[in-house]
Length: 140
Image 1: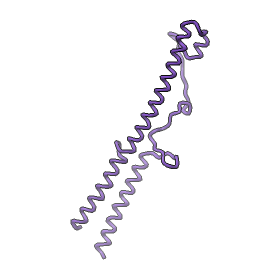
Image 2 (image 1 turned 90 degrees about the vertical axis):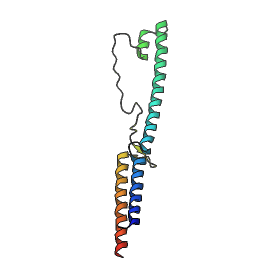
Image 3 (image 1 turned 180 degrees about the horizontal axis):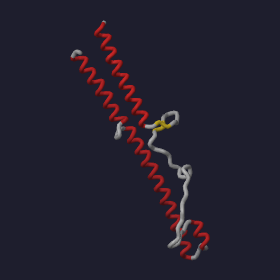
Image 4 (image 1 turned 120 degrees about the horizontal axis):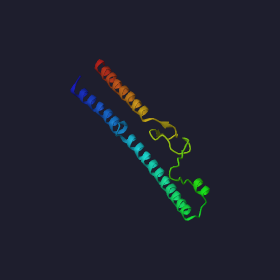
């Protein structure tokens, strides 16, 4: 193996590794994009809960002033001291999605782990092609 072959192999392996770490790694571009989407979804959820909280506080104040009947206040969500209430939410009602997956142009979900595996396979195939080409060049 000549000096040029070693440099080419080191450059190829370095490039493939750099792409893996900076794009597909735990702190790579794909993970950061997922975190941005998750942050935005959580921020929107916090806004919705804040609006719901202020509406409940407003209804509570109306109940305190006597503007609402007790049954109306209970339907509005007011819970008196010592009472217990159970909330049951279905998965579709919350509007949350699994943000650990990326969406490709066709709209289907692709898990980042699958993309990592795909890149590893492409990298191995690239290295095998490099060695096969070098072996053919040495024989010919």
